[in-house]
Amino acid sequence: MDKAPHAALLGIASLIILLPILGGSGVQSNPKPQRRPRRNTADAGCHQHAKRADYLFPDEGRYPVPTRACAHKALAYASWPNNLYDAPRVVQRLFSMHPEYRFDPALVDQAQRLIQKYEQAAGKKWRAAA
Image (cartoon, rainbow, N blue to C red; front, side):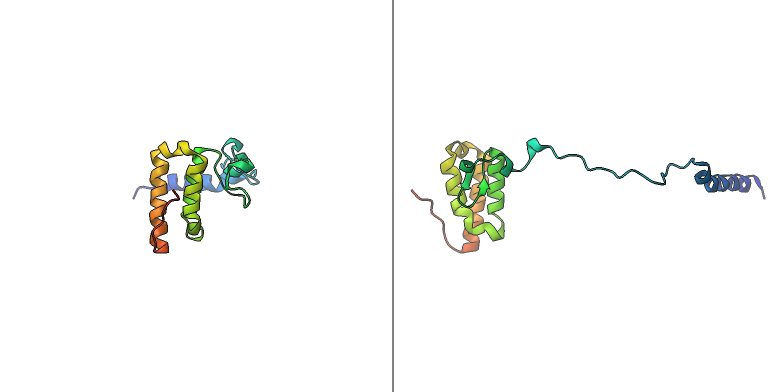
């Protein structure tokens, strides 16, 4: 048998043992705590950018819609099981406060799916006020 590979392995093993002693390992003994990156406040929640008039229910401070993205969020939150009873009022107020959103196909589609979900859960048809 050839002893050269064993000698090479022993040399590597001794290096691995000596690296921490020599300070050559990449591991720090006392690493700095990593900080989380700061959150971009420009993309902060809808509540931070909303005025009182921007809420669908201003007395309750619920469903802020200062932007179109927040309108999508409001419809998504209204589809949650614990908020589903709000669905008809949210859709009605959203499109009455912001008539320009009626021309956004994504919002209209999301609102239609929300109403279907509400009708299925409530077991009754919802009719928009004329």
